[in-house]
Image: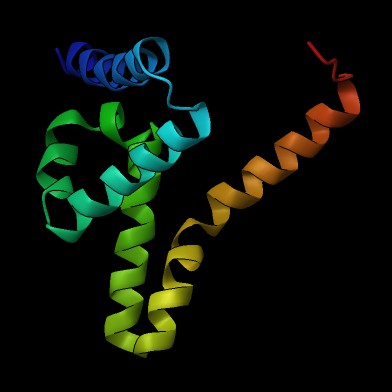
Amino acid sequence: MYYLWVFLIGGFVCMLGQMLIIYTNITSARILVTFVLIGVVLQAFNVFAPISEFAKAGINVPIIGFGASLAKGAMSAAQSKGLLGAFTGGLEATAGGIAAAVIFAFIFALIFKSKTK
């Protein structure tokens, strides 16, 4: 049952993104930013944690979880380090994911050749 809920909620998030791409003129980049901001807002109002407890990877793995991690890191660092922590805390909290994305992108760029459409 756990896997079913993860699949359904993660699929719903992906379906929302796909519907925005198909039925609106919003670019993929703006949809990505919107989903990050949704995660930030959910974390800022302390709504993300209960959703995450229920949905687990279904909400944490999509980009909404990244936005929530950014906000959580910024809020906790702001409490401990002040204003400077608000700017640096989000990057400290997500540095591992960002580094992995850059490293894998570099490896795939070496292996594959990009082509224009």
